[in-house]
Image (tube, rainbow, N blue to C red):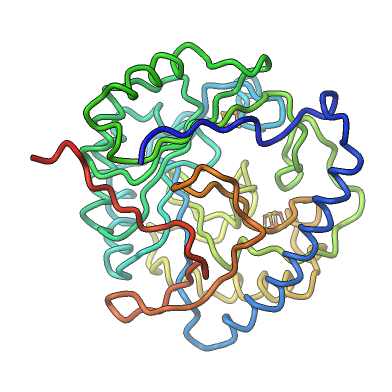
Length: 346
Ligand code: SF4
Ligand code: SF4
């Protein structure tokens, strides 16, 4: 437990001397992983009762305060109106996760800046009660981070905090620099892992469902599988469920969690089934947003214990939760339930 600082995980193209070779190598690994998961995941969804999602991404607030050139949520583009999720939406999600004995990852962010929501410690405390075995995490750009809010989040029961420090010179921004100093001497420095990753604002990544401002929309659809509608749900502050974490502008809604149907019923709907069938067969062209998306379609995340990127070694299995409900899980020793044992207690 403690503070882990990562070097940049991506190189801007103009700084990469090996960009051609690197790109070929990455594509090969991605394609092998995608094929492996294409064989593994669809059969798990053939039964009448499909397994519950593994990852919930919930935006409690709709906007961001940063200006990354690759991101549609860049503050200058003003793509979304300001909205904080009403407590009835938060409670509905919490109550459903409690009904499912949810034990996966609960990310209280998606394409937004979670620390803009001043209620965040209260929200974390609420979800910790409802999903005691979940891995509750945030990823922040660090602009608003400070030791006080992190202390509140730890007391509330957060499992993991990830800071993406965006700076072209590979330097800490002032708020992150101060936070690192304060956290290193705090009494709770060993109670959770805080990972800081150095990032550049002018990266060229994938096109986020055709939404990225610094990369063109695809002219021809990829014939690729994609895991996201098999393992994650994404909920915006209005309670809309959207197809995946790349649907930044909420173009493909899968229902609203405040309606008559439960989240599981939405997850098991005909619409989801149809999307899963198309993706299982590599037919991205049959789904509007997927048809213009060049996302590799595999999970890429950070191991909260080591701070290292993981992705190509993740596979999935189905296991029963304590309530007997089948849930999708990562089939790996890496991660997940490093439930906070706060040094602050007592
Ligand atoms: S990448 Fe993150 S920090 Fe940057 S603009 Fe988008 S949401 Fe904000
Ligand atoms: S293909 Fe792209 S838009 Fe479609 S589900 Fe996958 S990541 Fe999302």
